[in-house]
Length: 591
Image (cartoon, rainbow, N blue to C red; front, top):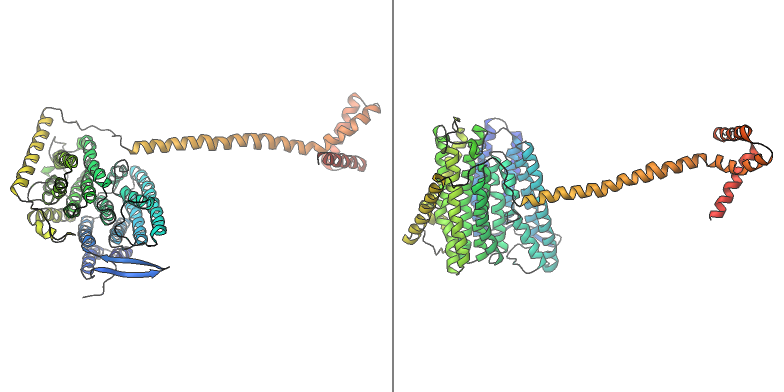
């Protein structure tokens, strides 16, 4: 046994050391950090650890149980794979952001109180935005800003909910919350934004495809799965989540089928897969929770592998659209094979990871007589095969010959992809190894029953046949260069409209005020105040001069002489006294 530390600390402190290390030692250090973190994790006993008391509250940085442990395991595994995949990158900002991002996700997973969870939650948003900005393109910069705005809104919802929850209960303990008040609704909404709920989802396909090839591997795992963890911890069995999750599984399919950018296809596919998890959390039975959590584990591996394969293509060709790719299997065979394994895994092919996890949630829907939900999940399964299972590998590596002949991905990328592909196969062949780690150890689900194998086989076969026939008949939606309108259209247009209105109202008011008060009234008053003594004196003296016989040119000379005397300060004492008297009389009358 060794003295353990909070799991997040290993990654966060290690990230601060990275810029100080040079050369090959940096690569070794990056790969060693997840290993040290994993050893540290298995040495932390179950229960509440690293408890700090302050201000009459308890802050828990190491709540260890079967639910948090499973997330902790897969987060360490993916951190190792993602860092191996990014060893060729010489940008310390990306390495530091990736490590702190991983550590922040672990901080959320092992937080036993809502306040420390919130701190790590915000760190998660900041570091993920940095990974998007690290690509240093205009599109990435703009997508990163939109990403930050959406997640800032989600963070405000979460913080407001936490404050109200503390006022209601007097406690910050993070356990089952349930949906019963404004506070719990705001907390769940804050979690839901990170889970990419329908209508609130557009930040994901907007931002993830604009990140660096290596940064997207981190992004594909931590934000949405951490949100699933918080929902499973705080809102298991909340019925509305069943419908939210089922909707999430279906609507991204239509976007993914018509999308040209393959990383955006995978982003919509990610939302689709998270929908199964959210739906399982909403059903809330032991089988459903096990299904949701096991699917998190499997999904982290094969979705990271899919993004790694597309990242390798982008790294070697600089292109990622279906219309620009094709025929790459000739020179990138390792990447192509790994992509096919990941695509088959997400589709639910037997002997691969998706087959032994996704169907648990579908089975839970059947056992709870949720016929409509079961139907939606089955339709979504067909859609997954169409867009992620077939479309991605077909248009990237086969399809028409683009004429591109890039080199195979760098060695570190190939190793990372091969490790993930082996994990996809291992989970599919030995599912009981995963089942033993689930929150409820008694798993009432047999993946390799005859009915399950035959049923999934038929589903996959006829779905693949439909793709082939539609493609051959020219009915399948053609890949076109363009922009697909999503829910973000409303807040993008709404933001521009708000800016236009504010510009016209606020700046318009400012311009009008400047014209009226600064250029008009103030200038007039300035001129009046400058000529006031002369005007007052002339008002009193002109009648006297006219009575004395001064007219015409003589009167004009007297007026000019008086103005010059007052401007130069050389007016006679009598005139000055008269002006002062007139001024005092005017002031007295006004008062």
